[in-house]
Length: 203
Picture (cartoon, one colour):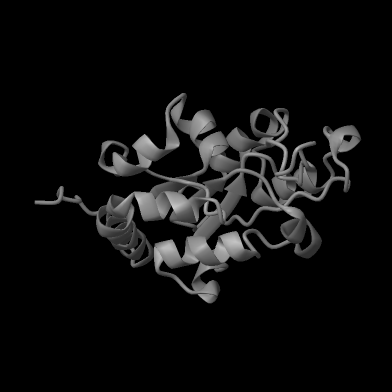
């Protein structure tokens, strides 16, 4: 019998694969549906996401929603937008600060099964270095973001929307003048049920 989305989510919530390595214990966080047309593939939950069970429920989420040009209600409408990080649980902190990478066991165990349950996807926002490494292979995040046309219509690479990205944005005006308008056009089209548009280069 084919696996259902409900069966899969039940299995994910019961997962103990990485339990010994998770300082706050397992709490998988993802938002999926069979009707979602847009997927946000990110890195791993932070502490606030772990506490609330809601992806991007922090300042980085505010920044990402601003980039996309959507409000919270739209962002968390899982019938339209799916949110699936590479690591589904909070991985802990690095000794010198910052969150640990997503647990390496997670994406190989669950990602293909999750993707099989989302047949309506048209566009994936590939957010941050770990998501880009898994989905797109090796490469520099900043270069990929500025060369986003190369990955359309299936993918749209973005930096992780942490506070550290603010300095990079200020040094990279093309992100605001070229990348963000294209991102918003693609998001708007997909959420409206239209194809990903063909984004012409700047004149």
